[in-house]
Length: 158
Image (cartoon, rainbow, N blue to C red; front, side):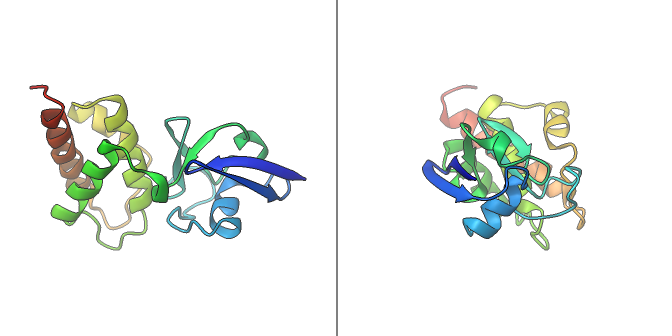
């Protein structure tokens, strides 16, 4: 059965089973391979995308449940917060192997879009469940703080 999905601002009609995980449609049908498969149980965060402004695990979300939602993959993140996160990631050399980083960036971007000046507790809560097998958590947190400071200051707050 065909399903109409809105991904990165574009409509895509996909002819797949409704119970197929959105992750496989994004990667295999639409060739948006920045979103990664990690665990298949929504435990690691590698498959995270934004759905209606919320960081969401796609390995357990079905295509049928994704219809009518605004889906942004790592390739589609273009907000000022996303760019601040990406710049901080580069400046601080956050990734080591990089496998988990698309999910990390999606979650960090979502956090900053909702809270331009997050506390350590806010960062910990937002990033909870995003596993980095290389253990770059201190650099991830530093990157979020750097991006928040740049974005928060650029917005005229202080």
